Amino acid sequence: ARTSYFSVENSAYSLYFYGLSIGLAKNSWLFSPVIEFGPEYARRKFGSSKESGYGLNYTLGFLINIHFEKLRFYPKFYYEGITNLKTHAGFVGAKLGVGYEF
Image (cartoon, rainbow, N blue to C red; front, side, top):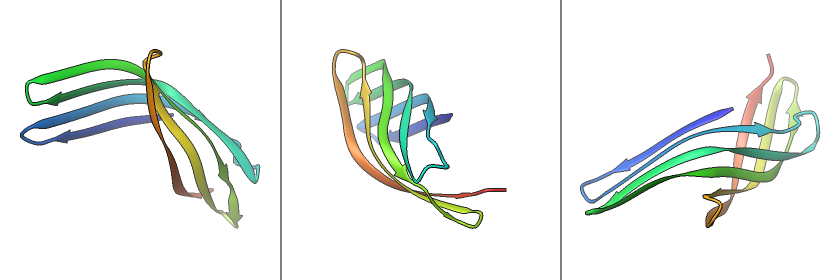
């Protein structure tokens, strides 16, 4: 599970995101599919105009699990999007994760 909070604020523009998502991946596979989804609330204001609403945040992609003793490195390649079931927006991304198994 992942929670997210993101805010930007200056004199003319403010942006807030609140979200909760759950994800699935198989850490023992070399190439693992990644699926994450969850609700998202966004609020933004630019000058005198403002808007807010709920949406669905989703991530689809894969990661490569590289194990070295108890360390795990996993580059992740994905598409992350948000939709209100009428319109959608998103981006393609890459991340590098590091994990330690106790």
